[in-house]
Image (tube, rainbow, N blue to C red; front, top):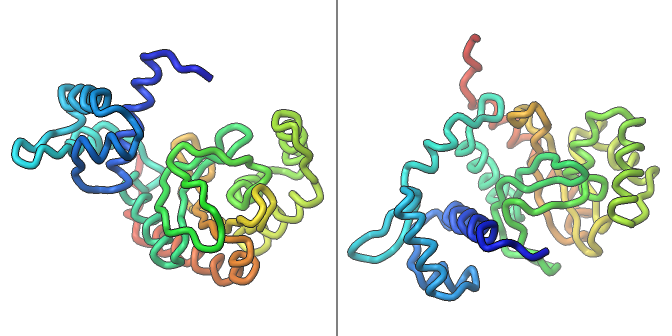
Length: 256
């Protein structure tokens, strides 16, 4: 799909802001340009524009750029139950630290699971596709999707599977999908190895907090399929414990 110049600029602006969220430190023009694969002139114009709009600052001594406080204030009203974005991103980081694996917070987006926060670890035993915020994965073909679908009725899941198979033009085995969903309902975590991508798997648990639309939020980690098969129970228990600890630390909801 070819993007118009305006849409392309908007996409690049969001990519820059997400890059700062990932590295969590100031960065120079050259770093941003090389990381994104953009011409220095284009990156310079974009960074200057974001500075003029108040989203970035430029240090006059180091010439490095960094986000301003306008960003967290801009999204300060957005919450998932009792949790704000900062708390959720910290949870994802803790999951990566506890497991040594790439950790992701995601929610449902139509027939897909969409990544919200990603904390990357070095891939071991498989070729990582370097996921980032906004990445989509088929809801019927990943553990995060199993965990999201676990709250749906079996009839609804069958409808979603048929629709997804038609859109993806890919066969989805309903019996295999239901096996994963039912296991998630019973164990409190979902896992799969090699269902969507050969050699890769993931394990997921549902948060006690929902997104602003009242939809499930899911915390997951990804690894080589062999690692998932060997450690799924251990990793599932670790993620459940992290989620329970996370909810216990949140402030009680305010009375309406």
